[in-house]
Structures are given as structure tokens and as C-alpha cells.
Length: 209
Picture 1 (tube, rainbow, N blue to C red):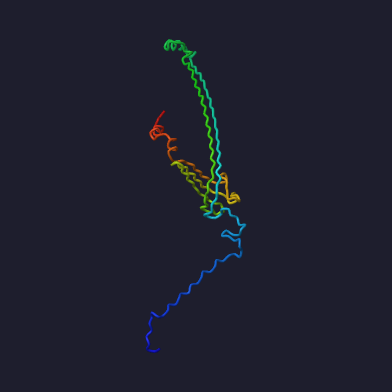
Picture 2: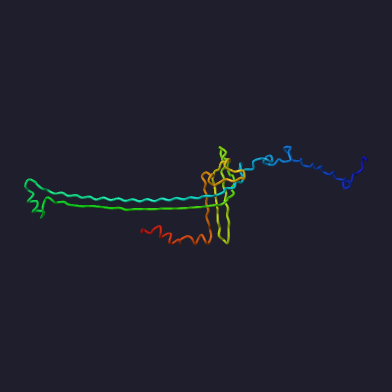
């Protein structure tokens, strides 16, 4: 009504209209995953994917060398005739001039050496793809730390692998890793006891004998 005041407290507020989010679109298949269809290759091939490396390294080297040398030298010099002065020369030197110099020399060397080294490492380490090279090869890196009774074992690996070397189970052998850097070290009481003291190490560096 004109001229009639309206009490705002009696006016019912209008409820906001809330729209439901649209359902995610699919490719039209019940078996579609984020990596493709159900038969898609699940091997690691993109940055962030995980690849398991089977470390099986066996190295053996042996070298042996032996050297023998010898030398004998004999030298003699004398004057038999020298314008009739050989008698005077003999009186001067107190002997026969025909045997003024008579010398013998000899040396002998015998050296030998042998070295032998064997190494074996077997482990399994899960790595991550950190870079895809222009030719499609994958750069991987990974590490694992295991601590038992305050003794820490650290395994680290980095290198480059070809996607074709990764098996269907997402495994790759360490022998197929290019520029592989494998480190297996320990930290703790046991590892410390296997090392010489710092004073002995210093003496080994400066000891001349």
C-alpha cells in the first residue's frame, strides 16, 4: 500500500541457488584409467614414474707381473808399444803398461708383483625417473636407508636406462644402466670399528718407510 512501511524483519531471505559440479568426463569406457585403457603399458616412461633396479654386480680382476734384468760389463785397456816409452811408463806406474785399466761391472734386478680383487653386490632398489632425454632415454635416481640397532646402511643409484630395457614387470637390470653410480655404505659403530684411528691414518700418509 502506498505510504505503508514494510518491516524488513518479516521479509524472508532468498535462498542462494547452488549448482552441483558437473560429473567428470570419461572416454566412454568402464576400463579407462589415468594412464589409458586397461591394456595400457604400466612401465615407467614419464618423469616421476618409479622403476625398480635389480642390482647384481660381480667384479673380479687379477694381474701378475714379473721382471728380470741382468748386465755384465768388462773393460780393459793397456799400452803395449808407445815409441819406446812403455818401459818408462811401467816404471812410473809401478807395473806393466799393458794392463793399465782392467774393470768389471755387473748388475742384476729381479722384481715381481701380483694383485687380485673380487667384489660382489646384490640388492634391489626402487628409483624414480627424474629426466627424459631428447632421445627418449630415462635418467633415474634413487636411494634407500635401512637402520638396524643404530647401524645405518645406505644404498644409492643413479644412471640412464633405455625404455626398451625395462621389463614388463617394471624391472631393469643394473648391467643395463649407463653411467651407473652405485654406492653402498654403512654408518655406525660397526663401520667405525673397521677403520683405523685418525693418528694411524696420519702416520701412514707421512711415514717415509
